[in-house]
Length: 398
Image 1 (cartoon, rainbow, N blue to C red):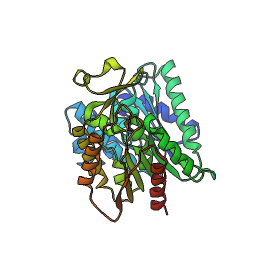
Image 2 (cartoon, one colour; image 1 turned 60 degrees about the horizontal axis):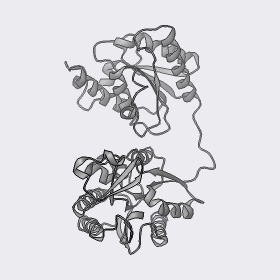
Image 3 (cartoon, rainbow, N blue to C red; image 1 turned 180 degrees about the vertical axis):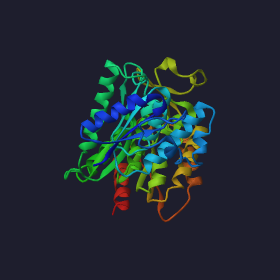
């Protein structure tokens, strides 16, 4: 049976952690208590804090030898990440704690594959949990009372969490015979037509997972890639890159395309919706951009047209990452427009800006046997371009 790893600081939360272990054992699970405390030895741990700390790249002294608590917690998070990655018997991970332990444990949880149960009982779970969860299947349970001693409330909350973790660990979800190869695709409203056509052509033979390119959407797709749950990617819509570089509200992280670089997955990509930077309602557009070419997409979303200079930066960012991909790559340029509102006669139609984007990608492109740049004299939402994406996909998956 795979094990529940119950993680916390035994030097300050020992009673609560041992109670969680007792409940999990009574539920029939195999539970392991992991101490990540940095203040001193805690009672009852199966894995002592020093054992975890030794997994830090610089050794245990980098964790336990710190006088600053923040530095010690950050170092222990790195050590716990490496420790959990070394295990091949994880059925679930259950964490308990306040702000410090929540940050520590969830940092390690976020590196685990999608599908591995991750449950954090936390004092901060009723607020903004984006920094703790990100694009992961990580469950946050609000502790209601502080994790500071056992009482009638904390026993129920912690007990429910331990039973939930036990149930997930004891009942893993098996693969289905109906599962088909999974393909990740990125989409925005202005590239929906393209993605819909591709889905129709590939949907009978593949599971198509579509991700709304709102920052976390691209992260979620790449998290599935890192988790080994995708067989390929058709990254039509890379609009999160402009938001990262220019300051929009749907930014990628600096690790955009990183999962493809790490895994070598077959990659078909394009420049969908990089003609725009996303902001909120019209009145929220930052002052330096208010005189730019703007388009109100809806009451909550205002788009700003990217300039030729910005497009050169965007193209350079993308092509640098493409050049680091060792797996099979086909990258397609739609020469007649990159979004629904970049077509001729539409508000963002700007051939000069598009030309700057394409030129930057051509200039930075590194020819290699595994990579090919394909230029299509068509709009991104045209049937010709959708067919070219599918042809590239079949070429890589032959």
